[in-house]
Image 1 (cartoon, one colour):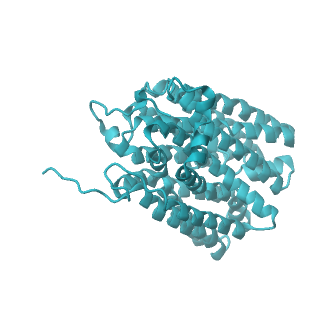
Image 2: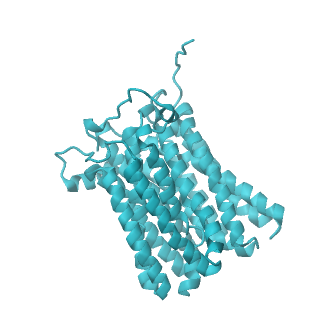
Image 3: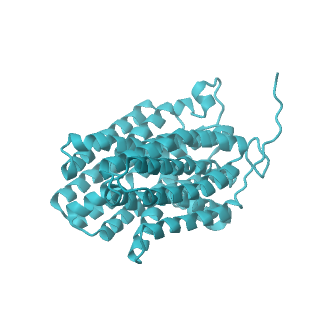
Length: 445
């Protein structure tokens, strides 16, 4: 929820960053999220095969471990919004950092002693860390950005978020793994080094953000803690459109996390391009996503948030996902041109995935002003829950005897469901009519 004290105020003088959609008082925070998420994402493209080899467990067991981690991400994502309402986003970011550091160290200890149970618990609990840090900052962005630039501001957040996880994280791993000796030893060294990136991101956020509105409670003072913490859930059960928006955002990046599980082995081993080429592919795919996140936020502000999500995010994303799965299967295994064709297909998916960016503006626009904080709690829950949905989908399909093809088409089916729901998410957008069409504006000569 938001009080009158959290209503966005237009700065007396707008600078270049403000006009781009980046609130200048939060500018360093975007860089902080980029570096923090890079540290979190170092392991993202090798953690499944790494745990399979180190723990000696089958891939299905490791997929289940990753699913528990993703479930913690989902819960942590909800708490990032709810706790931001209660104690302010700055304090929530501190909590997220501490959780990440403590359980990352315990996770590495669990791997070193080869304990499946210890490793699983530590890895799962670490899942609370990054959503508390990153999505609390997104709440901060939402209460600071001007309404007519909210789509652009959310787009820039995802430039930072995706720039770190997995893009910069994968690029860091690409250099760190051989530096630390390659193989399992190099991957372990890369994960230890990732702690440094997380610390840098945290310090930048704590000492670089100038905005004052993130240090105090957002919810009205009369609200009890229990009521604040459950406000998002109550909103979801009482407003069907909020539930639909939650599901659309949940589906958004689920295929991304699913591909992290099934594609490393396909690209590295089955198609013969090796781990380095797989990591390089993810850098290209999500670098493309970085380049267009802000573009699609801007596009949503211009042609309508709902229209952008429907045609670019959902329809485009489904076609891009099919291309990323099938192109590597159709080109000659191990061929140079086949690899780059596969990279290009992945980049199409990475580009169109950004079409969902305006959902960060749609969700709070679905409800009255006093419910916007609760709506953002559900948005952040869905954003984090996408990791759970992605990994759980893979785990369930594989457990039922399916393969990568079945996994891919399951995700396409989820996109079809999102296409149905998005029809009901028209909102009153600044500068547009209720259907998202741009209103005629006078232009001064």
